[in-house]
Each structure stands twice: as C-alpha cells, then as structure tokens.
Length: 112
Image 1 (tube, rainbow, N blue to C red):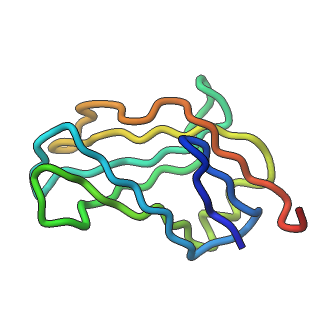
Image 2 (image 1 turned 120 degrees about the vertical axis):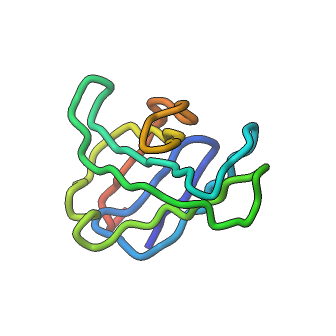
C-alpha cells in the first residue's frame, strides 16, 4: 500500500485507495469557502481523468490543508502509468491560481 510524495512527485500503487496524503499551502489569505482542486491528466493537453475539490481542514486564513485521498472507484480510473497532476486554487467556483502545474504522478504495479 502506497501513496507517497517525493518532493513534488506523487507515487501510488495501482488500485490502492483510502490512504491520505497531506497538502499544506501558504502564500495567500484563504476564505472558509475557498477550495483546492486536485486534477490528474495523462499529459498536459489531455482530458482530466480525475478531479476532486477539497475544503480547508484548518480554521486558518494563512494556511490551507487538505488530504488527497482516492476512493476505490477513483483509483480504478488511473491504471499503472505515468500521469501529471495540478492543484488549482478555487475562489467562488473559479480558478484563481494554479498551485502545482504538471507535476509527476506515477501509478505503479502493486507488486513492485
């Protein structure tokens, strides 16, 4: 079972789900209604394979924390392969900023 970060690279075992990976974001003033959107794509110009919106887990205007966690259904959408991910800052339903852009997301076979 794995869902780990090495720098900005995320690695997970194929079809794993229910494991949490924390993200802490600073550098802005956050409102309680703000969201972070996590997106996975095959490549920069490809369609979004998975998109999830997260609320701030902290009662803070200076720091935004969310926990990336995939369900079994979401995990089944990303077979072993190399992908990229984006984290987008969402204010009132609109993208305000891209926090992580085209970072590596690797799904490896569960047996190694």
